[in-house]
Length: 311
Image (spheres, rainbow, N blue to C red):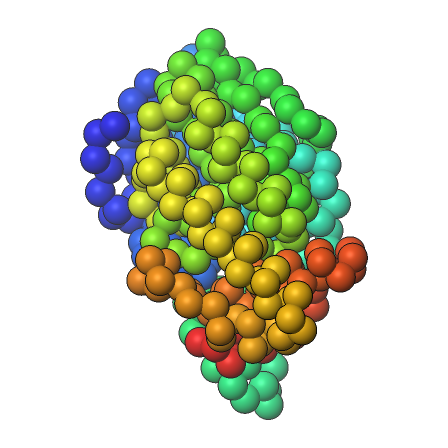
């Protein structure tokens, strides 16, 4: 794999595939992908707000002017891969059925209101540090117009794009976008490179299985949801982190340790240099819910409060 610099903007990967990268890959600064062939293009994800998405679409015009975006794939339901959906007006929007259902529960207006709320103290400071760079005003929830379960094969000109559902993991309906003849996969937030994964849905074992599925693919170039373009070594690192947290959280649950205590107690070792280390609190919380047989989603405000204490 050719070395792709982690610089903001559109990067050609070869064989009609491109990555749009956003350093530093932390909260909200996600990546996107573009596959172009024949007279059309397929976009993998928009960005967190309208300004960033407009910048991306302008950067892509050298490709999309002759090959307009006719298909938009959302890899999952969080705001960062779909906040700019409304700007891709002529495209069919494709996602897993689980993603589409969860997206309806994540109205961007709620986050916009929360960011303006007074009296949040430490939580407010933490939210500002995470999301203060983004503008959530004017975003209209624009859900998928086509959904699927399991797998779906699409074509961009003569090029095949395989959509593979691997959720619930990061969210309930995570999807990989594989371009076989380019030996490239766009992973959405199944991969955070140099940043700590956050397991909103789980179970962690599903996410490990998703990593194993990528490792079994005949791919050379791996475009993560956050962080620099990588290869299978990056996939192994994420899998190892998730396996480690799964085992360590289970040990602490067995001895009755609380979530916050366990999150503080787990030594991160080789993973301690990754950004957003406080996300381990959410990952432990998700594992504890699994072990307790609790299928209800975690409360976002409670989870961000927990992370703010560790940050």
